[in-house]
Image 1 (cartoon, helix red, strand yellow):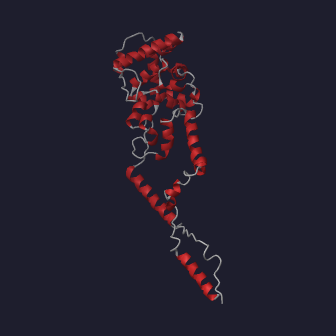
Image 2: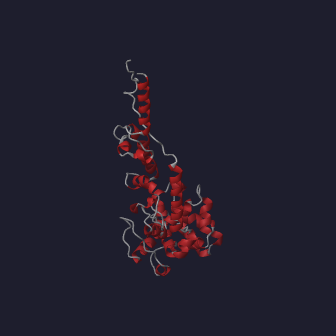
Image 3: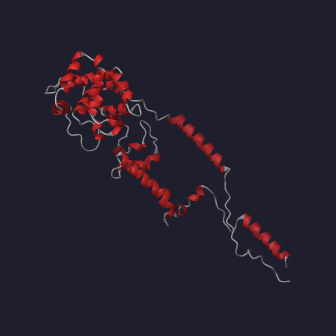
Length: 320
């Protein structure tokens, strides 16, 4: 009798992929326990909130200096005057709060504000700039260009000994300091912010030396790759590495629209283009990343393949 060999015996190849799903809950449990233990050991990356009252109580001289810079248009809040409807930070952060609290301020503050507003903008800026430059000279500071560094904070004693053509600016600055220290200023900004209640509060705080010095101390500025760090904590959001690169290194990445555009292009590359480009799409296979998800048995030595071969062999012998 002619032996009969099944047609598929020589041509069929078996690829056995035993999925180890039972390992997943075990790994998840181990990771959960490790995270809980790590959190109990090192604590939380929470940081005390910086409030206007706290900052002005600790560094009142920094607030007086910040007011001068807001009035001479050199403060940080002038870097994007269209953001959050700021338009004119001097009006939004200094003049408007004083007007709203005129009933609670000393007569000399209201008189100083009236004198200030009665002058053309050029004179207003000149007074504020004279005060700003006098403070810089007393602190022995040059220009603020170059890499970020901690900023010295003037004391009230130092400011009281300054002399020059400052106009009513020092009195106006002390009026803002009074509103800040009694808690009124923060409540005022939270009430007028168009969106998030802390928008104007944060912008005002960003003009203060306190916030910049805190950021530098904790490595949070752009030139310190602060986006991937936490204040007072050595573990940071590593998953923000790619957005941080777009923000720090790519042209225009530090602006809002540029940051969104670069991240959208990066996401488009990895999600849409990467799987379609020959060579690039094979990188995970070359790196054998699939082994992190499932295991593969050697085809020739797989128990299942051997069992099937024996079964086919038995069928062949039975047909002889």
